[in-house]
Image (cartoon, rainbow, N blue to C red; front, side, top):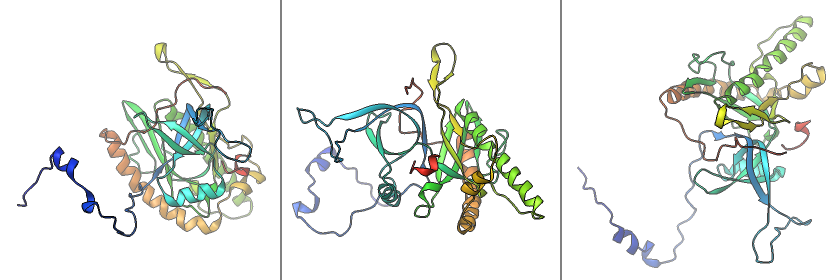
Length: 303
């Protein structure tokens, strides 16, 4: 058995890397990229971004402190610095950034993905919490209802094709399911069009994209002293499905094989996620949940 040597505080305090020599060791070690980046949702979250002048430079006050614009943010966001490829695409697209205070008190920078248009990477949408992840969506009840699913963001194609994970809890979980279940109406409309043309074919959920975003008005949630006002998540699927809508959301066929492979992986991921959620083993959101009071076509803009 190898000897285990415990480092003391004195060892750490006196250690000088490489004897103080400046050496060239090549490239910096890269932190591992999470298997799936989180696409999180704010129901009305306090955020800020640097105030810029007309030329795009940071504005400072007379004491040299950076001036920021504070605002209430509702919509989706994902953290900066988690994936170099994603950061490069977001930068090239000119996607805005915003700063959010995490539960630890750290102020962390995020990409503002307010109204993403997404492809649902799943075989189906569960109707109850007993599906076990078989559909590719984790939907369980463990003290509260939790729904977790994978999506690919249409606005990032073709440069970025990796899936993100969206997770909603408690009363917001039914909001998410209600929003995405409208996708079945889209597929039914397409199926009717195929049948009129004397054709038929499989139509996965990701055959057509849909836009997700915050409601325009605040909604009251909770009871007694735990009442809060939030912006619920909604789907941009219209009540009347038109040909223009379908043409705009139809998947480019070159991604069909890729999305099919992602779906098979999503099923295995959802099964494993379901077991972790049931066992209370899950990562906690690093940001402070935006369930407080708030003030205040998406595809044509980056987000």
